[in-house]
Length: 228
Image (cartoon, rainbow, N blue to C red; front, side, top):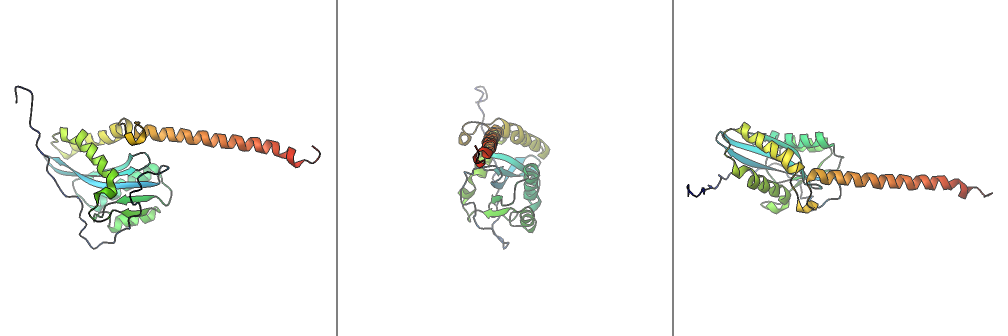
């Protein structure tokens, strides 16, 4: 095998990241698998995954805008606490400044049911939403992103430290995934380009509406003047 250039790839360790056995309050499944939305900042999904390093586990929380599938917030830590998901959401809110009424969907993990996370949602006028118990399909978009991350990047790496993993994952998300990776759902463009094209179309539609209004106001006096 060595002479032929072949090698064995061992299955990565598995670790459970969702602890739904808690007595904390839960949100209803408001999103209800409505993954196609009409505009940015209408609905986000969030989830946690784990990355194995020689130094120990690295936990990654992401927030994804369903409109463009863009990762708009993320956080990494050696501990899977409520702060992990709060920091990811804070990043998304700081970058995007979404309006009140934004739906933020997640699983039933204790981090997402924590007091600090619920307070953060309420503070920014967000609507919490949670998957049904044991149903990963209710958060399929986030699960799909983690699948892409691990298949396209993590499984090819042997991270020695958490810092090494953090830098590599940051590169994957901010540069490759958001800026270059093509998505069939988006018509085979990347999330950044999809949002830019949408903004251009929105501006054109707005300019056309203003132009039509201006023409209407220009001719309006003629209609109101009985001598003409």
